[in-house]
Length: 230
Image (cartoon, rainbow, N blue to C red; front, side, top):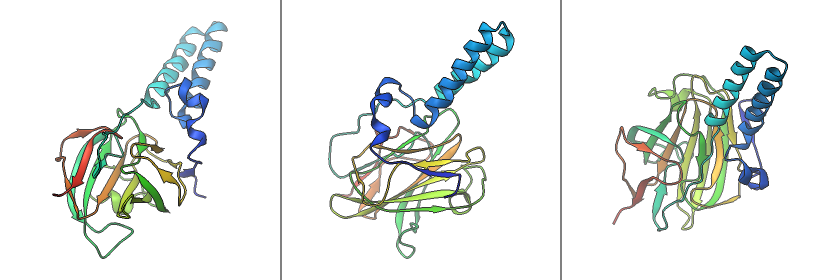
């Protein structure tokens, strides 16, 4: 399997360590190792070097933060799968149905955002497909077609298909997906992480209307980006 994509079982990611540390499991080891190394180096009286390593550990702890989120409790909605800024709203053919037209909502995650991704709907995972690619800036128009990416197709409780594409950016070289086909998912459930600046494209079925605008900032698992049209 390509180095840039890592699959993890959905259940282990929510074990005791997850509750003790509000960090993504993929980053907890990095942060703790840097913090521990920094303390040891300082104890060896290499204060300046130890301070640098501690600073790197503090940054890693902040970067891999994974706060709790509470999704809205109502039916017929789609929540954002990523923290960040809405950079594109358009009509597009989703990767899983090339001949159809969906609403696409693209969210760009800067290095300052939380990078844990969450499920946009409740239902079941129907398909996961990784596509190798390039590493252009994630906010560019062609990033979703040329960059390294990972497609996740969800079927909601009524069988409607929704798609979410994790797109690697210029700095992001690793996409983590914790799901497998046929896994059940809850709306707002943690599904993976993309390292550093990156992007998530959401594909909403035509029965939905988009409820956000370009330039708006959204939170994964909490911000509603679409709802069933009346």
